[in-house]
Length: 115
Image (cartoon, rainbow, N blue to C red; front, side, top):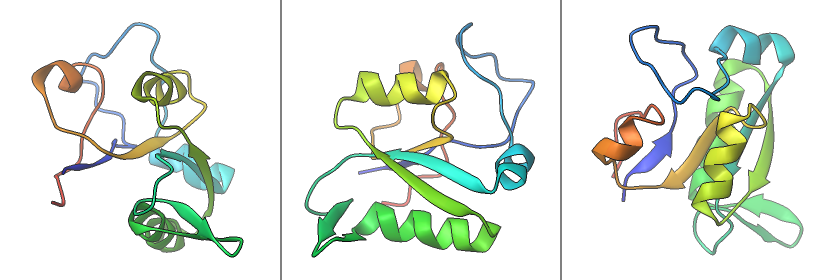
């Protein structure tokens, strides 16, 4: 499983879909909040006694603490909807286990896989 955290840094050498929204890390820090989409399941993100938990949640929480911003989680189990949140600017990154494929690389930027 490859965990997807799409890059928050603008790269002018990459040309993505015509409707994609451009944003960068500085704008996220200025806003004071990172909006992430993850899937709701028993390992990546879930609520236990009203508290958020899970592998992706812990990674996102550590990342936002490092940046000094708040974390807002959106859950979406349909990949098409998750990609739409990213492309319309409703979300800053996806934290979803995905296979890195050449067709997906044309649409989004991936970090290095962690698993």
